[in-house]
Image (cartoon, rainbow, N blue to C red; front, side):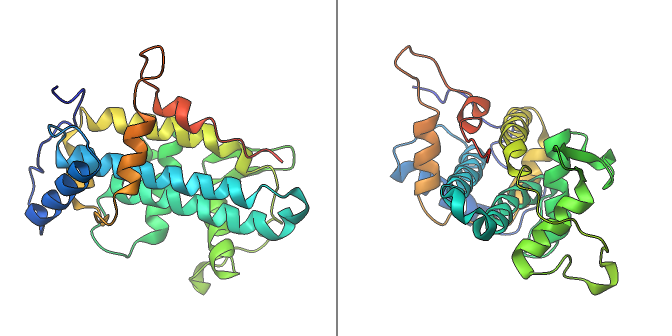
Length: 240
């Protein structure tokens, strides 16, 4: 059977260092899990990224399971979740190395709001809880706190008055992640620029599991209906 869909490009239309080796890696992963052989390497790479983010979301669910431990696990859970959003931002920007972490995270957060991420300011208010309103800048600093025990990795840009952790933040993220990934997947099928950025992004074909998992999640259900990314990711419930 031909592939049910593919990204717009079979290969990047810009120079990408090591693309031939990278493409072979994605093709091999897809073959090892029994994926459709007509899937482009970029299609497999996008599926891999979504599979990795799904695993990250599953890890957040595990960290939040024991309510009595939330004061200890909530901040790490937020940090783990933010790492998935950063991966998305890295692929949108086409970050080819391990740097630009903060820019990638902010881009990912902005994409969760709108595909017009380039015109979304850091001051955009993305999440509103009963206790506060959180803009892109603050959410990024909260991730730095979760990862490093401080608000920023750059003391020159320290933010004063960082709020105490709000136990309602995470419950707002699954629908935002679901919508953001759905748009990204769909726009990759139309956008040459997004495909080229994905090809450039520093994501390696490391293991088969994320590809296997996402192809399984994308399979038809008992009624012969394909599940959407939105349906798959909104199953995560992080309310406390």
